[in-house]
Amino acid sequence: MKAVRYIETGRPPEIVDVPKPEAGPGQIRIRVAGAGVCHSDLHVLDEGIGIPGPFTLGHENTGWIDALGEGVEGWREGDPVAVYGPWGCGRCHACQQSAENYCENHASIPTYGGGLGSDGGMAEYMIVPSPRLLVPLGKLDPVKAAPLSDAALTPYHAIKAALPLLTPEATVVVLGIGGLGHMAVQLLQALTPAKLIAGDIDDDKLTHARELGVKHTVNTRDGKAAAEEIASFVGPRGATVALDFVGAQATMDLCQKVVGRASRLTVVGLGGGTLAYSANNPPYGCEVSIPYWGSRTELMEVIALAQEGRIHADVEVFPLEQAVDVYDRLRHGRIRGRAVLQP
Image (tube, rainbow, N blue to C red; front, side):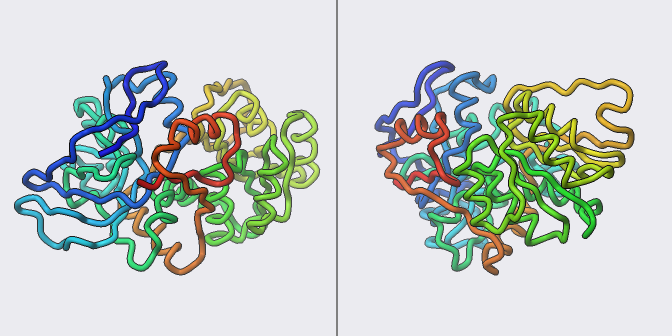
């Protein structure tokens, strides 16, 4: 079968032939419906994650159960499922709370999950090591639902932690309306009454945000002008929550300028920026959060929102054979919403 493989850091992904995997005891084989193409994959390809290749990429996966390993119960072949992405030990305090994204034994586990050390979903089939890592999709289209397991789950986890602050008179700023950001603005509108501002350097991304219901958008290419525009909207209170889905120096600086006191500044993107602290900068009472992915139960909640039609991923579907070109398009900002590879 064909698979999109990470070989080593600094080397482009390669499409190669690999054997069809077999499900061992306690494992499940998934026939892949779709694998989301995430900007984090570019960090894996360019910088590595400290885990040697080769392995099959794709950490945002959906499909149908194809084979059950010995001892697996409660699932049937043909069931449509989403694969929970961060694979922890399954035994520690965090994992027992379904928060495998914060597994206490992560340093001793030789993989972060499928597509992040273990073989992921950019292939016809993938192996999931435990049934606890599956969430039923119900009647959702598995191809269109693939981004829910990261592009929706990650912002949902960040937003859920900030919900007590997101009251009707509060303002939330979302920077970066790409794969995660276009889900974040939908989640905020579905979950909170807070006023919403979407920012991006790309006017097409801002148009996308407005199509998704956002009333206030700001082009952030000129950071000073963007900060002034946001300040004129939020007033002396400042933004109550800022969600940075870029994480570059320019976006982190902008977040630091616009949040007010007793606020929350959440950095999700991996753009390499740093946050400098001085007296009242960020303002007093500002919480700084660096969340990672989300819990299994939160993925269930995300899927429930999608099943009710409250959120949806805007996807561009490509055949697996176009993976190298799709990564190039992603690198140059030419993907609207989320790209999904379909075997």
